[in-house]
Image 1: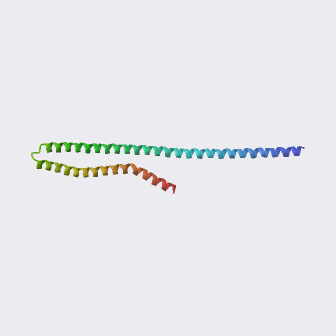
Image 2: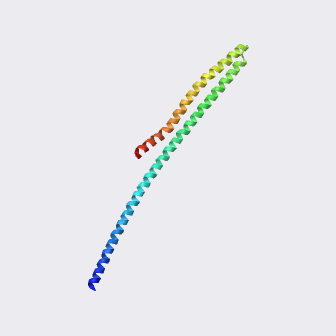
Amino acid sequence: MTTQTAAIENVIEHANETTKAAGERVREFAQISVRKATEGFEKISQAAQTASEEMNTQYTQAREGATKASLKILDVAKEDADAGFAAMRDFLSAKSPLEAFDVSAKYWRGRLETRIAQAQDLGAFVRKSADDVVRPVQERIEKFTKTAA
């Protein structure tokens, strides 16, 4: 019986060692998995933080651009109103219908030329503002696609 008992104890000891080794391997695997998951989460969290900061910056730029465009439009409206009042004053002080017609023609010709210049100026400003807002997004997308490829 002592041989059988020794053999059983040897099997039990071997089973305990195997179980202990397997437990350690499972623990190591779990620790590695947790570490990799934590690293992945940190990378995702950092990317989300960076994207959020960039979006806030772009939103601020867009808001500033819209504010500047609105101020330009207000300046155009003020200039138009001032020119209209000046033309009306000149029209009402005209001495003859021919002079009144001349005042009116000069006003409309001047307004047309001014409108074209203002539209070109405002269009260029809006294009530049939009490019300034969109360019970082395009660069980020290109960088992401190059990284992913």
